[in-house]
Image 1 (cartoon, rainbow, N blue to C red):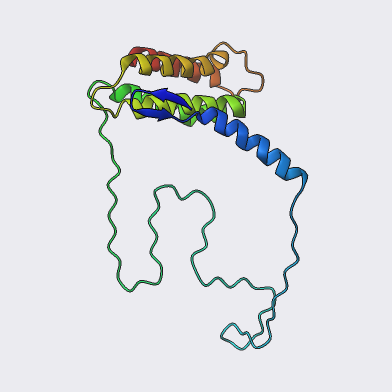
Image 2: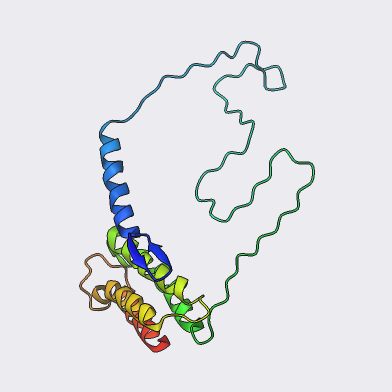
Length: 180
């Protein structure tokens, strides 16, 4: 972590690296457990015995649930979510260019590690442009980093890049530059 004006700043890249290393170690020693259930007397309503069927008595969630709202076992539910943040005036085009860059980068043949680093740079931009007075220096540095991940694609240096990736990368770089 590094000290910032308003407290501590989390080293996201370091955390991602640490998590990858931990996962590699965990993959070397998988945990296996044998589970047996006593299904005597259990039925699925029609009288059929529980034979290999999955019965869930609660919510089952597969995948990302960022921002999700769940209600379970309620008779009535009222939920509200107000997460929209206002982009500072003059930064709207830049925010859209960053979102487009992050959306297209995985299809351009860029390494997984570079995609993660580019996402961190893009997140820095997006977190800054919703401030009342964005730090232009911080935005410029993060945009420069993001352009750096796109530059090899734009110049044709990325082997295995999808068709049209060079032109798309050049267009995104131009949009990022002109929106500053």
